[in-house]
Length: 425
Image: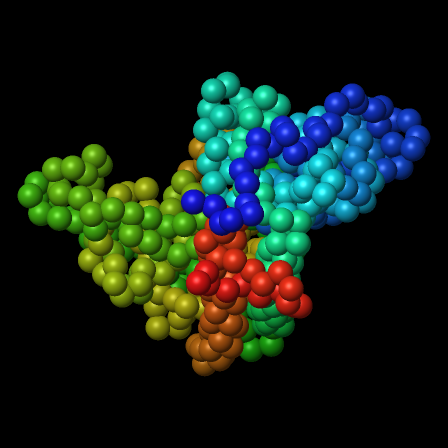
């Protein structure tokens, strides 16, 4: 039930939707910023870095909008791409510019309504009726939205904007933490791929790999240039599956995301009968996914899990710390050697050749140096995890607050500045 003074209105009654397209090759449109779906961050309403029509070389028709319009991307509404540019420009024909009715609906409030979980759910349900997931004009305008007074809309939008600022600030902190870790890796003679330098998925290289033949950086003083064959041993621990016993299966996430539990199955349910035990501390490489960075150390809680022969299970000797190897896996050179040790005609069908990879030379420091490097990188990684957790908590809390504010479950003090959320009496 909505609070007193609120109403539920059909969107088509409170907005005007854009119609009639303009030619982006002609002035003034060619000099205007173009907002496409790729320029809107999913789920946040944040506008990224749009370029002008002339910079993009656009030729197909676009919708013009002004500083009062909200842009809603109609393609794949589950991506939840909405923004309020607050300036003139043109947008893709795959988006709708929406002009709120003056004195009834504020643009920045409308943005948050369109970003809300309830609206996304509605839009997704409508998009399933067509081959290409999108919401058409009729369904969009037929949606219902809650509308409080203009003053309360202002306060609600201001509160949510403050949360967006907090999230953005924490994301910048997270980016700084990442940059510090990358700087440490480079300092230790372990350079990593530069952002934006990889190739798109489906091209000649996966995103995590820079083009070119692997080139080993200069060997630092007191380090050794050697092959990993001198330090790694493949371990084979066959598991004779028993039909009624349970087994934990693990997987290795891409981009060095770690080793995770995939499922727990009875022996009779495991489709690939050839399985092998892994132990904590093992270094796992997915033979079909290593081109995407799928490798990592088995954690203690997955000791005794099983994997198929699609994985290489490796142990280090007493001169190579497995944790150092895991950080080495983040470097450009390591990733390139994995790619160039894989055979196949398509990125998603390449198969890793372990023996070939073990023949590549690597720079390996003395064990005591490895341990000091690991200590510093562990500390940097911990800071990253803390910042990631903080970002996720802020986003979760904002979503819950948004749901309450946009339904009137939580009211705002419309006379107070700055705006504050309060529980209803």
